[in-house]
Length: 96
Image (cartoon, rainbow, N blue to C red; front, side, top):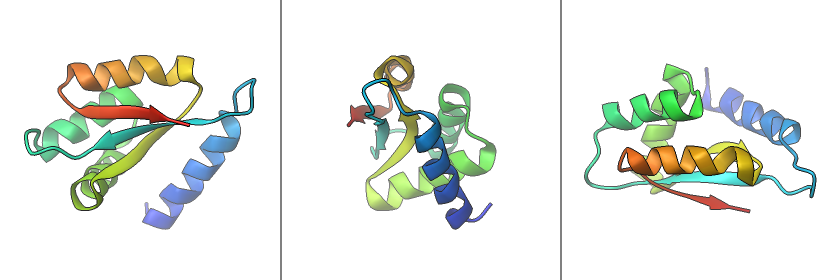
């Protein structure tokens, strides 16, 4: 899957996850100097239901750009995923 296709999927996902108040929140993963690529990829696959390819692309974006939006949705949907990433020692926040 090309980066362009991944971007199109994210836009479609955003329209599918609009909340009651019309706000779509973003789960943003930040780079760190502790976790390995393999651990980040495994975590994104398990916690965010990414495919291997999506997780790999996000891990590289985080590494080179410092952060990456890894999931879109409501606060109720994203909060447990943020907690799960943090339990795996990854740095993540939710933005509106």
